[in-house]
Length: 381
Ligand code: TTP
Ligand code: MG
Image (cartoon, rainbow, N blue to C red; front, top):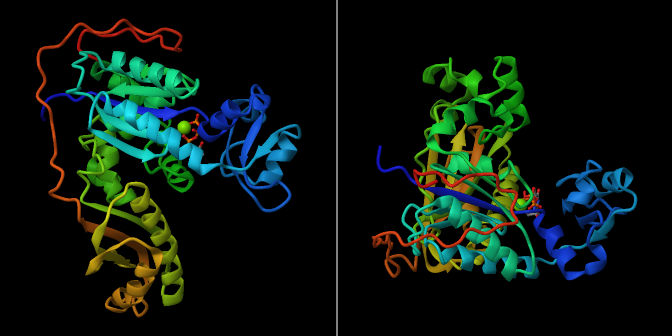
């Protein structure tokens, strides 16, 4: 294992709803629901903490939300405003490091092991970032998790929401993971959670007696991940999009299918997401790859490289049927479908910069006002 890394995961609090409350003072302090109409079949995109107290949450039908919280104010999302706030917070992240991996508009991993201002403590950096976000976005708040790997940092950022910082040092990691409900583990949705419960696994501690082979037998490939993560090991690097060599999306189907039209419909939905991501990240890739995993877990990929970048859904739709026809999908049932775009035209143009830092400077004075009971530790967390 290499040097211990310092990873921060930042996540804005009630992001869309907080932006709406910021921009309309009448909404402040009120239960605000951002999403579709409660009259139609709309769903809740997100809601303010005031609304969460009534049990309202993301992805809930808006009609149900209004029954739980009849005095809630419904607002339509304004994505262009959220995108511009997202750009603002990313600029703040880049003041500290270029190793920034955005996960969505409101969330990112930062590797601050080496950081531009040579601040020796990751906790201090997290405080600086939260304060800068608050000051420069018109009092929007974020929460942060600080640790030595991505998994723990991400889980930790949820612990003292809103406007909280949670630090998990290497010494604390084993106890932290042991106490973690299994639902909090990566990739554990309701179905896997039930399966875990049937095996008597309710927390990270319950994973420990299982061997790697047993976990793989029960859960497939992700079993390797559970085995390692239960021991606090996660060496996935923070991958800025300019390092990432491909952008893709795949989905495991609820049941194996043999209907080619259905496959194309699923691929179209995946394609929409990939195209939206490419556009947001301003990336232009020339190679389109289709991935198919058959019911017996054998996978194949089929690719096409185009003179023009893959930028719109039409281009994808032009090529996907042919790529799919070049597989055995249909005659052989399929359990997973995926699309990715690679071979970016900006590759090589931008080089990976990992800065070597001078000796640490004095840390800046610490910010106050956060729900941050975390002392800065001597080992740099
Ligand atoms: P989240 O970070 O999951 O939620 P949040 O920021 O609203 O609240 P929290 O304080 O718990 O972090 O998602 C960020 C934004 O992404 C959210 O404001 C709206 C959007 N979103 C969706 O569009 N659909 C979803 O299902 C979820 C969960 C979020
Ligand atoms: Mg959030």
